[in-house]
Length: 145
Image (cartoon, rainbow, N blue to C red; front, side):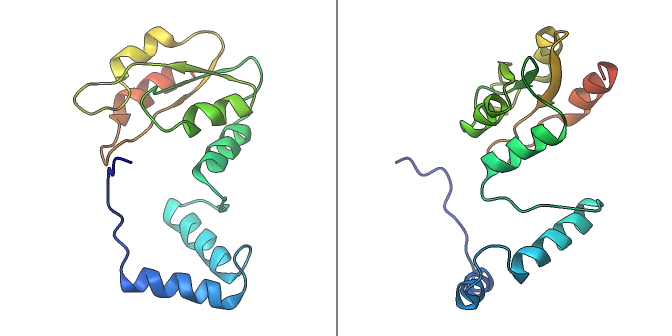
């Protein structure tokens, strides 16, 4: 296996994990509720839902936005398989737009050519600690909303 990044786990994180394990409540316990409340507050939204994986989180987000059969979702081909799988799980079709070789993120200048009448979402992927250039993506999405 090629190690891309070594996890940094400090004493505080270890103690938090032990507290959950010792509680006997691995799911739906007070730690999950506290996390959901703190995350919702940080995001400035009324609700947040913890999921079992990033794949599940993407799938639920797509369903919440009404993505389904016959729809297309633009995303990056250079990412973990969860990006494409979450789109496929809804019955929609992933449409891959090439990446910028400098950032490894989806190239905003190539997105517009991939938009069709069936495009319902753009799902950019932030990779290797580099955020996508969201300003042109958001402008493009607003124009096609």
